Image (tube, rainbow, N blue to C red):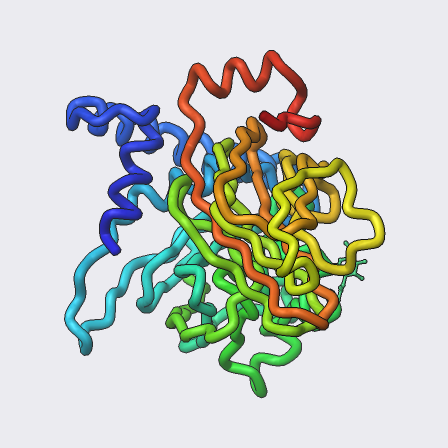
Length: 347
Ligand SMILES: *[C@@H]1O[C@H](CO)[C@@H](O)[C@H](O)[C@H]1NC(C)=O
């Protein structure tokens, strides 16, 4: 458990392992966090009430926030508590309290769990002025730079049901729950001393579908058991992906390894997508795989976001197993020279 966070710490420093460099990394993380706070408060000062969803938060910036949060081994009955910041990222369960020290108009907190977890957010003490323009809105997913994950096409709920506005429904819905391992809240509080507390817990998701990886390296097996739906596994880092096994029901008896640029006509396939936002419907196809195989197909995708997306007709049990690792600096440089992100980078 702990190693995932540890690894991230190492990676932010540029994949270098010595503790000295890790320390320096921590310094630059602090700087970046300050920078984001600065940008947020700047836009608030300018009075640009740009809609919060058009935030400038990048995946890298977001995960650097997480880096300051070391995962703790906690005893069962101990509730971890800490203040919630105006821009925050949480991977731990606990109780988080936001208290405004001045008008804070563009705040967002991002939550992430393991792939097989869902996020539950319970409002405890809420002391905000809804009539005066304060709000807290939960979102079932993440919104970054105006793009949503999971995309509207892949989420089980219509978009309007993914937002829960505390000021409209707080008296009846004190608890909101996400459909996947990521969720977030947007909030705006005008008066100093106003604020709220939330309790974040993680629930087991027996059928994880859409997922954002917490780490730039790992492995995963995605299974869609005879369901008509599409699932995406998103890695918001430039990575090399190795597909170890792909099993699509309809071609089970033809173990042909083949990669074609399109899987037109196939109702069941896996696509690899690359792009610089989080909405999978706006990303570029890097490769389509519509034949079962086992072995290894690997490719490097030099984009900010890499997605393995499985399209399933519901007629078969489909399964894909893959591993991924962060591209190192020189690999990134050569990928960038070769082609623009999102163009075909197949090796
Ligand atoms: C899954 O994705 C495919 C292709 O992107 C689309 O044609 C299909 O309608 C989607 N299925 C569902 C259930 O959303």
